[in-house]
Image 1 (tube, rainbow, N blue to C red):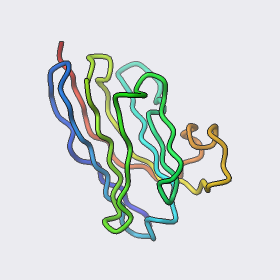
Image 2: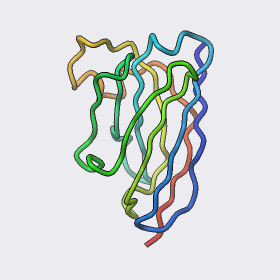
Image 3: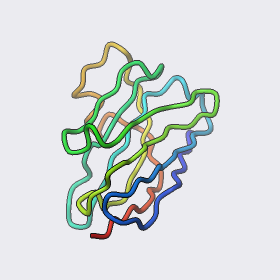
Length: 129
């Protein structure tokens, strides 16, 4: 059974930075593509960023491109989301997810939550104005 545990969320001010982490256990971490999604109150879960198994392919949503950076450490079974220049509209519960996508998968496969079979419990990020 694959388990994902997020950490690093919190309350910050607009313009601040924050890094959230997700540790994966139970299976070989490098056999999964990883994604970050977020969900704000009253809204649907939305794609934030994704990274391929070997870290060579990365996708971002337009709303975070240039501000957020996804990375992974396969030796530590951890995926990170570095968030800079945070805005109040970034306030949400952030979830990491693991999926079977490969280097041959297209962007749409990485960005759809339906393609991820394992999810963490989420970590709250609140950005005050």
